[in-house]
Image 1 (cartoon, one colour):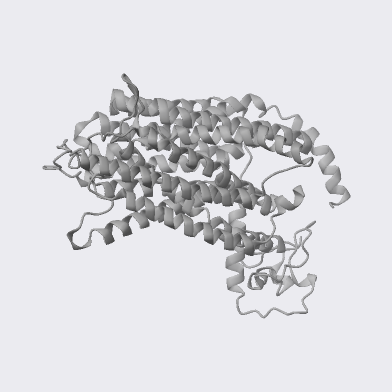
Image 2 (cartoon, one colour):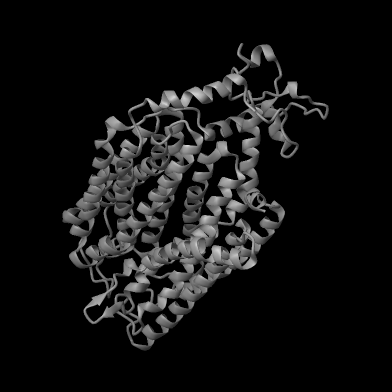
Length: 571
């Protein structure tokens, strides 16, 4: 409970904030458009990038795949750094603005590679793979500069866009804020989902049918609209100043506990020995991970504390709350690590594009689905299942049982991992059949030839992948938000992105290891440039096996973790 002065502040503060003419729902269209156009542009570029690198830059499959893995890993990690910079130093508005400019410049540079021939190597015979000139150092520098600028831009926009929109709706009334934020979050994720659907359909279709010049020009226009939509509303935004970042606070605990590593912890310690935050429910740290408790020990009050009772050096003395926040993060790390493998399987989209391009993609004699657009089946499945689960399945099940019915967070995450295994098995079976048909049809020497097999056979893989996302990925985010303290909501929002970044690095390591081991003795690598001569079916079976091992690991972590707070509240 807060003090009377705190309660008085809570009563008067909304009146003061409500007089602020800035912010509100009038800023939402600009913020939502900014994020939607950025996702539309970036996702539209990523879908077909494996084809651009292998066919236009003459890269080997191994090199191109690693480039995309690293690009994705950096793009998923930089939002975490962007959040630290925004929260601790400059604020959210400058970070988003810088991200818009950086993304736009990166996409313009990539567009230039399609417009100006000297920026990429001359074309070669993709069938014989003879006389293929590798890209020069200057050409690669120009290409990678575009990737780096786009990654920096994604780090700026994605780190702060959601929170910046929430800032505009903060009117001080907690009850009213809850309703406003729920509506805002719904529109935010709806706009992101819609832009993703347009990216994997419209933008990819343009690239396949109108060429790279127009196909890369469209994302440039989308990113320009994204930047304009953000900056046009600048006079109306609420722009909060930077404050201490929670990530910085966690780092302070690690540093402070290391500095005091030689201190002995007394079993007779009292609350006066520890620095507590005013109004905190924690007077003493808990007994788990006791080594971190040293960070909040007051050794010499005269030197360690300021006259108002705060730490004179936050890198040498932390509060009990900071220590407990770090312990909460450490506790969820094993469960967080179980989500890395499912993200590894999802990151294999570069191969799925090559695979689909070698299959019959016609729906009608005159129309075929672009190879980079098959991800739409995953998105559609995800959206449909969310609607069915929340609006139909749960209400009907609750009505039949006569009481609220739901799947626990652990059950949902576990089901998602199981569906991920099934998705990889379905994918491996299809690839095994496709490869045999390509060899039987005498087209094994031509990786661009179309095997006598419909690409619609890939739909079960994409549908199962969509269901795996719906159960595990959404369950993960809800798990982080329910298990970590409310003060750590920004940490919870970055954990999933950090997992994606680690997953892309792990995927690169697995891919390179498989390539190095399987090509020994002069044999053809499982992940050869020619997918008909390689054994990508074996590679997919390996990923399925690793996913099954990860499911076993998850069951062990789930048992060790104990009950979830979110599930206990529902009981």
